[in-house]
Length: 335
Image (spheres, one colour):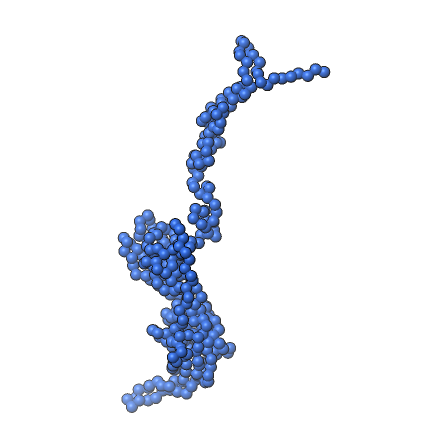
């Protein structure tokens, strides 16, 4: 059987004596016709050609041009992560950069500021560890805003949440929020602004389930202390006499001790006296109340016999603690 050879290099002469044409030319003509119908720019003989987005193409012959024609922003080529230039995922929301000393009022953009503000940053709130996070709320595109300062807490210094309003570039005073880290609830249920706090009580036999509430932890067999008074210890020396060590002494300002009270907020259950040594050791003594009648017929409260802390109460002691070492400041990040 003979074999038939087909030459794909030349297309046979057509009707009417057309000049033979190469197969490639014919194919290009077909593609050109197809591209024209689809609305593409360019020619298949000078590839690439851009096919319009409406007809299933990218609208351009380059990656950057195609993203523009497709309506894609620069995040289309960004990686997922929390560094500059990344697209944030759920984990990255709220994450901050290396701490940089800069004016607290500089960044007024809505949302979480990516900087952790270290000590030395102008117009920053004071207190706590000296490091702060910033969150901004804005109603419109103006610079009027509400700024919340979230504390960078460390052991012994949880810090306090503060906020400030800014209107027409005028700032209001910082307002401090009270919470379990900077207040204490006395044995009678009264809330007081205070910290660091020590509660003196018979921990083992106490009838108060709220003795070690929140951040309070054991401070020896006769006391519990909150996180800012961590490291203190209470020792019972005798009936109604307790020695407190591990602090710098009693608080330098404000109240220092609160007498034990009945849990229903009633009367005082004893009279407290305090004494401080040069090394910061504090001695607390508790006595029964003794009422005497004055010459004018008035009942005057006084000190009676020594008394151990009642099992249904405790003595509040406000202390002065050593300064907490702040975290080392990181090198400034290049913007």
